[in-house]
Length: 168
Image (tube, rainbow, N blue to C red; front, side):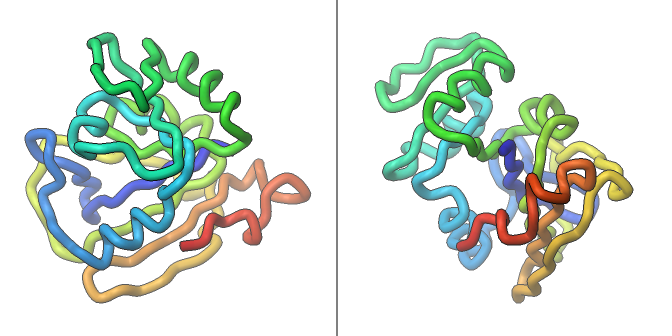
C-alpha cells in the first residue's frame, strides 16, 4: 500500500525555503508515531530536513545527488524507489516533499493528512487532489491541527478498509 503522510495549511502550504514553517509539538509527535519504524520514501530536501533516519525503519531517498548516509537507499526515480520499498514490505509511507507528493498522489492508496489550523506563508505546496476520488475514513481534532484519513475509493472493498489505517 502507498500511504502519503503530510501536514499542510488549508491553502496547501507544506514548506518554506526547505523548512517546515510551523512548530507544533503535538503534530510532530503524532507524525513521528505514524512513521516510526516504517519504510519511508522521500526527496533529498526532506531527507536533509530530517537530520537523521527514524529508528528501525528504511529510508528511501529519490535524488540524483550523492548522499553520504549508509542507512538510506538512494534511487534516481520514484518508480525505482517504489520497487526498492517492496523489498522491505507491502507498505511504503511517502513523506514529501512537493515533487514526491505530486508524483505519488495519483497512485496512492491512502492519505494521512494533518490540516494545520493557522495559516503560514510558503513556497512548497501539497498537490490538489479530488475529494471525489477519496473517502474520508476518519477525522480527529487536535488543538492546532485536524487529522484526516482518506482512502482512495477505487481501493475500497475487500482490499482496503478502515481497519487498514495505520494507528499512532
